[in-house]
Image (cartoon, rainbow, N blue to C red):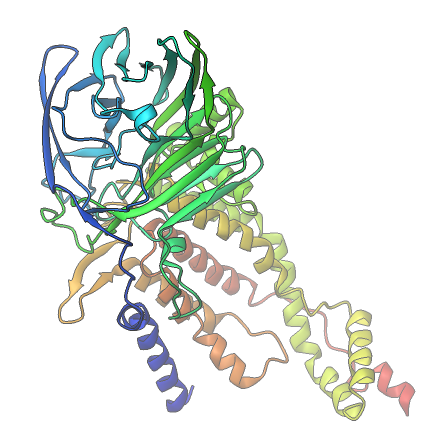
Length: 596
């Protein structure tokens, strides 16, 4: 590659690195419509079932949208906390719902450097700072009143109850079951002597923000909902309304979807989800983007690259209006899932309720089968052989490479034979250069006669691509890798950042650099397909630099897979280098003989 080409590559890499910063300068975020200030911090005290006093601090949202329903905060807040082996659930009298969930088995932050302990002992928390608790019912005075409920303990759960001035009595029973599930039965009863006309209601699902400032935001924080056939995921990327390259449209602040077909909706981030599954499909789902609270631990982390999202996503289900005659009551049954994106758990829940809740893993339609198979294989190796997850990735990569070895070998032989036959094909091209159609036909006849396929070199790559995509989507959301160490890496679900480069404020991720070096080595060792233009060959030699850029800030588990995969490709290239191929035909080909 000449100096000019090298300069172009260097400039392109530099532009790619600063592209998003330039985009933010040229297209700054549009302000939220009609913001109104809220209190920054609220503290409430409650009592656990064992009598322990619990104090909860809520970092309130800085702004709310004027078209969003709100919960009254003018009354004293009562909290009831219940705990099982998986989580601690805090219920609030304000809105009579689930205020937050502390997942006891998962730390809030994991160090990216192995053997480096994070100083904060907090656990991952869902729904903290939400504008309204899960299962709050909103829709105006007729169904809200002052939003103040009375709370009491019931077996394995909590009851929230209130009577409105119009005679509507609301009783919500929350009972813990298993698999991070809460069964919620809500009874709306008319205790008056008059008919009650109840308006459209919004039932709160949850609040989607990052659990830790480390977590990825644009593609993993948002709301997913399921209509019985397919899912629709509205992440921060959709709300940012980014176009191609640096272009950006007006920011979006609200989404509504569904036509009486919302089977479930889940406020989720990279590794956790808070989902509500109504007994009967809801009418609509609404997602609103509002300013996120600031966590008390945001400034206390010792890890790098800890800037989280500035926004959260408040999700509600819309239920239609209805009429209650005197003494009539209606009970709505809903199931709440508040826990990790763990495939085996989500699949069990989905099987019980027949609603494909595991789709919240966002594996995608094309790569779903491969993602699930790879995840189950990785977990089997980890459990059966007690292998660390890093070595499980290595083992699976080696197995896949061995599985594809016969095809790779056949492809290599075909490419070598193509190289041997190249002089004869060049003769044909020169002979019929004035008639391109005839030239192509003669070249194809020649290759068919000599049993070579110009696409043979592409088949292994094309067949392995779904496996790569499966690895990519699986490693992106596999909570098993969160905090899984390997060599110097402390967390395979995150980049292996060792430090920030002084003066550049860019992370130094070692494993992607090793991956890029191995890919460059592979591109120089692996023979190019015959007939490629020399300029294109030079470009192909340095294509790995683009992979390095795209994968630099992705999970180190993905970089580990791609590094091992390319090392094995180099080994295969070395093994097939001396494979024997049939001798070439005579320089004067049969086609040329007939034409004389």
